[in-house]
Length: 443
Ligand code: SF4
Ligand code: SF4
Image (cartoon, rainbow, N blue to C red; front, side, top):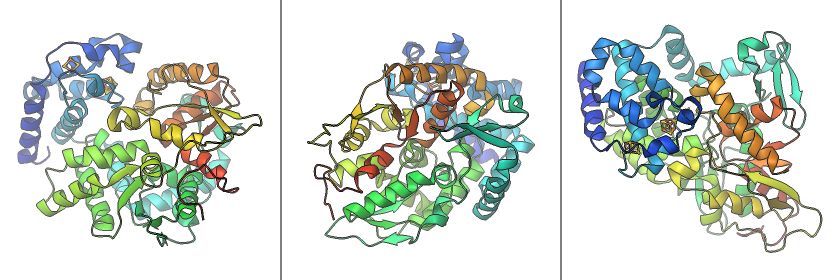
């Protein structure tokens, strides 16, 4: 059992937040898991009802409560539409931390989180070795997407198609770890996130290209570590707090104006979840967390609001590439960012946006949810795939690497020739020709 004082603190915070749920059931209409299972136990209201007796339930059958909490994408759809403003994600994350503290983490999860994720150099070495060996057990699956699948034992992976690990991590490809600001432009700290570093270095390179183009300064420390959301989703508050403290040591007191990330999940974690979940940290760290959270922005929002990127006033007269846009839950529902990615894409005069049905419907990834409940994640993702394909777009864009991974899996398995890109990559493609109309200061 974890620290009793800490567990009681969590329990009291959970109790305080639960009272605002008035049991209206409006979360049923928006919950992607409920849409698949139809079970009240899987929607926010059902979980909240269970958590009301958490101290009692934790003594009776804590694993059953944890299993029910695990049946959640942490997409925030319920919180975004809740008329009472119930902080559903905070409640669920605190309840998971309470239960994991009470039960202890399963050994395999503990080894991955505390032995691997919590130690940057170990994580880096394991990923580097895995990237070298992956060719022995995987083969290319879809040329347009760049996905892979297992050579044998595909059923062990649920038949997944996935993005291969990059040969070289993003942080090792950077010629310089900083860029000087020019012409009074702001300086950013660039938090690239684990998935960009290891699976999508091309997104990190696009961000650097765009920053350099606009003369923005950049501070890109490679001592940065995971934002902590995988640990927190598992209830591992200890690893989460360790990672937050390490990131604070890297970024706090540095001279930058804004911290940007190209990952919707990292952005919403640093901006919204860090301050909510940092009560167990020392006072000075808590203050630094709040200061950093206030400076954190999605890269699309930064490009539009701080660098003046705007839709092109001179769209190409040639045949344009059709691109459809998926709104990641952590970008639109958590942060209210959805116009900016579209402006960043439309800054490329060769792109025409065609909206899919329900662009803000969850793609079904949910981080560890897709690992534990791939059948439900796949059913939710298949709807997204059908919506993408119905537009006849040749590109689908999303500002979250986790969504890109899930959408790639769904499209690749269906044999679709639809490229999957981050908006900033599409914008970066315009810069080689440095056309007018892209906004900001062209060099
Ligand atoms: S969580 Fe919000 S939407 Fe769901 S039942 Fe409670 S008050 Fe209603
Ligand atoms: S966070 Fe998403 S999956 Fe979880 S209960 Fe709310 S709407 Fe359903």
